[in-house]
Image 1: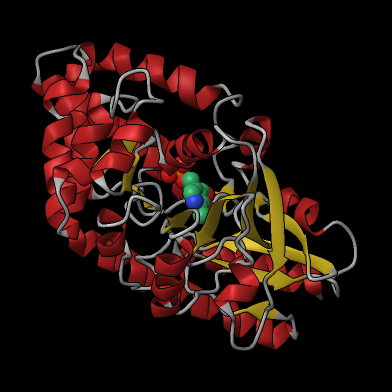
Image 2: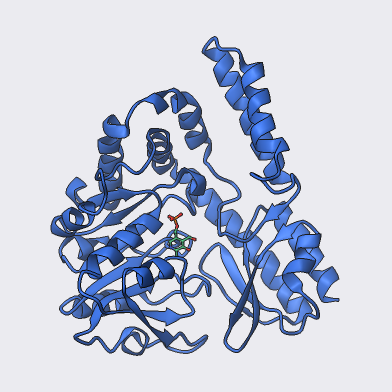
Length: 376
Ligand SMILES: Cc1ncc(COP(=O)(O)O)c(C=O)c1O
């Protein structure tokens, strides 16, 4: 219900903004209502709780919402004037140069550019199993092969075992830290040491999509000084702008230039409105902290429920948790879906798992209550 209400009240606000501009909001809102809300093609039924894509149920931040409403009329303009402003803000935020940043339509685009770049000479990408895979088909289409080293659930993780051995065929090492879908985190100092060494031979791509949730230090400082290290960041997760499609690479200027050559128009696959939302989001760090705090509370609620139900789970440093559903009879995700809750089914470590994203506290209460019913 929460999602629906948020989306509806957002619309109401946009109507008010239109009214403020002297436009007729009723028709506009009605049309939007019809297109986006009555047509179930675009949104799942109003009361569906979406816990399947690691989005931020609280976003966009109030500042970003205001920026979107204040700026939607610039949609007739190219984003040129806004892009340098965002790059400057990002540069200040991470203490890097503007020449170290490349914007993309989500960090997905940045991963794709890196794959395209390294695939000029066919070879291997080293990653772990499990890890984030959505981009893997694209990489395969570019002619890259995957070497997937097992990611143990427990114990001291050895970087060489996880991401080695680097050979003459290695084109890229993909390190997702914290990792999706396990939610586990590698010691950032180990990653740093390993990346500097491995970058003598290959490109090292460090995906920091969930780093804020783990309060992890960024490896941007090593990326800006090393043409073989790329750090990827996104506004899709803790900043709550998944639908705005905006992410970026932080890298050496030479690498930024190389990656930007694969974009038809460097930096400009992002919309002007999204850029203004990102600028506002970056300035709204209290929202970020609030989301992290609420996510931690939601995780605790889930952990307590898993313990109560004796369900195995992997403690998470992100906004999602992987928990084992081997003990639950029937089709778990379908069961959840029939109660209007969407989660992801996974097969890992020789068993059946569910990856559940942390929604609002109310949504997670609903989730845990439903889980208790289904697991009973
Ligand atoms: C680890 C990781 N990296 C990158 C992405 C891509 O995010 P986006 O393209 O929305 O920035 C995701 C999305 O789920 C992710 O989990």
